Each structure stands twice: as structure tokens, then as C-alpha cells.
Amino acid sequence: MSVFDPETIITRLRSRYDLSQSRDEFLHFRNPYETLIATILSAQTTDKCVNIVTKELFARYPDVFSLANAVLDDVEKIIHPTGFFHTKARNIIAASKLVATEFHGEIPDHMEDLVRLPGVGRKTANIVLDHAFSKTEGIAVDTHVRRISMRLGLTDNSEPNRIETDLTCIFPQYMWGEINGLFILHGRRVCTARRPSCSICNLSDICRYYREICE
Image 1: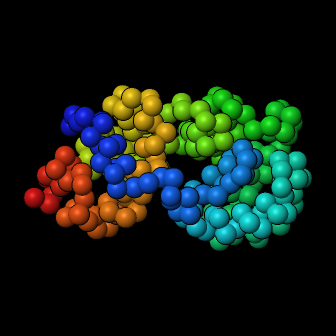
Image 2: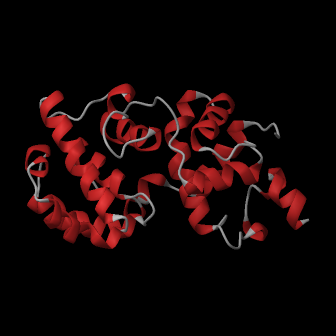
Image 3: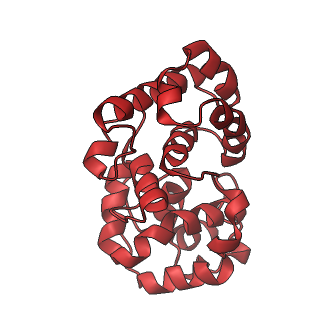
């Protein structure tokens, strides 16, 4: 594993991407309930797709209690475009029921409680904690974070929880909340899955992938 100055990576990405001006490229939500449900639905699909279906979903089911009592077939029809809609529909209804019964309708704000909810792993829990409660307990590792972390040489692991552990050892905690957003934008615009644009990347000089594959 390569060793870097984490400040260099974050500073360069900040200079390229302004997270405060990139809201339309991420999930839309207005409260902890919407944050949780939208993030569960975002697995294996795009944020744009989720934002389209959640407009109708949240209009029909504006809170945990209404979604907990929803008819499965009705929810499946709404979220069908997101893919894996059978599993996702079951998960968001079951998660809502658990929140309604065990947490009095309030989305929990602790990692150990969130990961008990159906469809919620550490990635989803980290996003909910960060965006809904301004709590930074870890780093949400999605496909973009995984790809860029491995290409840069920040990790030699492919499993998200192990990648998260590696990243939290490299980056100080005050940076954790930015990493997911910055890495996502870099992964979408420059370090894409099929053909990374190494020639315009401002991290290429410290990137293992560039050094081993592109040079």
C-alpha cells in the first residue's frame, strides 16, 4: 500500500469539486426518514433514478408510519425503475416497521441501531449519520470510493468494510465526511470505471494505477 499525505489528496479534490454546488448530482432528501429510504434505494442504481422515484414515494408515504403500513405491490410499482425492487420494497417497509415499533418513529442516530435495519449496512448507516445527523463515525464506501481507493493505492482490499478501515487509518476524522462526495464526483467525471481520464487527473502523479498502467 502506498503512503500519501491525505491533505494533498483532499486539497486537490476540493480544488476541483465544490460539494456545496453539486447537490443535483446526489440524492435528494429533506429529513432523516427520507435520507434513510433514499439511501437504501440507491444500491445498484443512480442517484438520478432514485430522485425520480422518491418524488412519488415520499408523496404517498411521507413518514415511517405510512410506509410501514404500505402494500408491498404498491411500493414495488413505484420503485421498480431502481432495480432489485422486490428486495428493496421489502427492506424499506420492514425498516420502517422496525423504526415505528422500536424507535417510536424516529430514525436512530447510532451506528449499532442503524445497521439492525433491513437493507442497511455500514455504507448506508454512514450516509444517514453524516447527512441526517451531522455525525461522522466512518466513511461510506460505495463503488466509486472503492475504485478510486484501490487505484490510488490507499488500500489493497476489495471488501467495503476493510476499505473503510484502511481509509480511516489514513485520513483524519475531520476529513471523513467529505471523502464519499469528493470521490464520487471524481469517479463520475474523471476516474471512471471503464476508461479513466488520467491525462486530466490532478492526482495522477500520486496514483498507483497511473504509475503501473498508464505510464
